[in-house]
Image 1 (cartoon, rainbow, N blue to C red):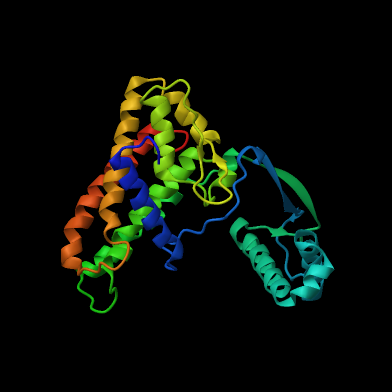
Image 2: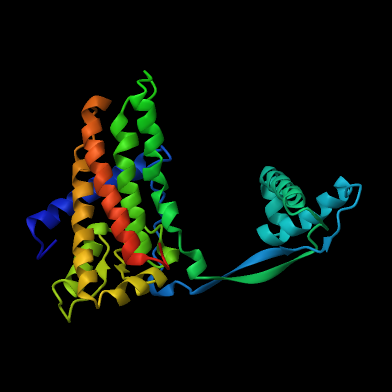
Length: 307
């Protein structure tokens, strides 16, 4: 990238290589499921969804006949999934979905202690942008799952995990990635393939650390069709508003530093380096300390509203 330091170039390469690995790998802990779309300015503040309408009644003996229940759920399914033509093309999906709807309905009866009539219709309800923001703790799940893996490795169970770094170190990268996406992107672009942590950090740095008044907060994606990626969404608005305080800018610098210190050690494990757990354990211990610092710092920057 023109005008960047060797450190920034190294981070861009490390980031690109490691994310490619996470995208291609199938294990749930660190598999990134990204989309080619990037909405940008076209992202909507409010979405709408269809919600079943129920009438509540006291619990009574007896059950709704299955044929009656089936017909009602088919009616709801048709409205949700495009009518009978769609059902004919994929009957197995229809049957499975109707079964799931019936199971969910029956669970509601048990949980809430009352009997609800079958859904009679659908209503359209708004889903705000704030409601679509992924949770702070949701971003942490990949990293927190490593505690269980470490416990198994420390117990010395042979043959369970043949490449410990994939299940102890790389999940940190996914958690870091998810938090930066949550911070910078509109919720509808959270899964966009065009996001880049190093380019995001460069754009933020120019504006809030180097204090360049003419600097744009947007950057051009390095992936076809090369859209402009700009900060957006309620988390970013909250975060940016706090950067008028010098202490917050100092915290931002620490966040940049921790991101790089966490990311670079993972870089060497991206291709074919496989070590035994005894060799990886000290790397994991140091990484754990840095992840604790990163999450605590981010919690302070975004709390209490967005942490």
